[in-house]
Image (cartoon, rainbow, N blue to C red; front, side, top):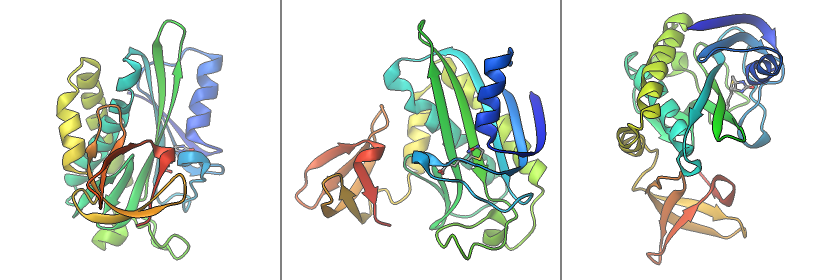
Length: 243
Ligand code: BTN
């Protein structure tokens, strides 16, 4: 593993992408930062966390081929790898909130931002950005979030958590690139947050409804059954979870 450790940077995802545009960067290069000044979240959100306390890093996975419909498998393998790594630290009640929030109980402890570049020959380069709240204590401005430390009431060795995730991710990524995808489909669905529980949703038209998550389709769409027993499939931008 080639690890570039930075003190402060705008965003580890952006740093890695810029580096790739300038020079050859080997597969599974990891960029970590103690502090990000412009950390990016899903769907244009910001990822703001307390400097020094948490894990913010990006991993380059390069030169691989997947059918376009299989791209969600990357999300799956990354989310499952993080959860499996955290299980080794006995974090209780871990789950994955579709598409890729890492939950402990009903608090978000981590998030994933994958930025893919697809070349003309079909090769994919993915910058896999991971933010994990480890030792931050104050979440007064983020009521739906927490850290491992808040959950467990103890301080964590950030580096130990980092290496556990990185090693697990490396192993699992190799499996998925060898088309061993079914196991991650099952592992992801088995850990799906609020699966099988009636919950409130809002669709693109603004209509609110109660629905039950059944599973995530192979291509990554959320399968929800509504009160009228109608099954629908949603992309990330097509549905909001009101919980
Ligand atoms: C989310 O849940 O919204 C995704 C958060 C992803 C944050 C990580 S921190 C390291 C990497 N660099 C970024 O700018 N974002 C990701």
